[in-house]
Length: 210
Image (cartoon, rainbow, N blue to C red; front, top):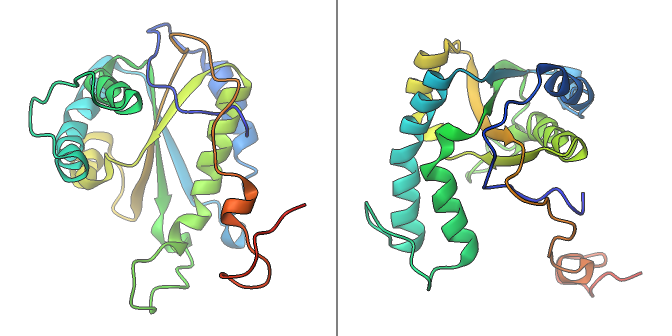
């Protein structure tokens, strides 16, 4: 958990099926509502399909860049941009080169969306699929593989469904790009201290410390 960072630069070396199977075999024990296990994983290694997914990824990625950073089409990452953003732009440009794309879908009927009537954006539905995705990320890190989780392909869901034969009752939850990292995996991640996001008894309570 302390070293499973996002990899954005990958080697093109193939990833053995046996290795991916072992990771999936462990990830399947993720918690999920009612033990319905509504997830489905498509392991995409075909070069042409990866290229098609790359092409479908670009419009929502460009929209995200414009909305979040004010960067228009064809923007070149300059030295003044944060290093992480420049790496992310490079990742998006070379997505088709990442040797494995894990497309995670979920059967909508298996989700208990208990916050659907609260008049705000729902977040609960993902609770029965994203713990599985996190298990995938941890399993990939354990095996020395790099991984990048993105949901930016989801706006292109109708075309992704057509491309991959995904049935209507399934929704696209994530794309996890997988491969051997082109460089060392992280040994230390930076995150907020517990006291910065945990309080006692109330949201506005005192910071929680050991």
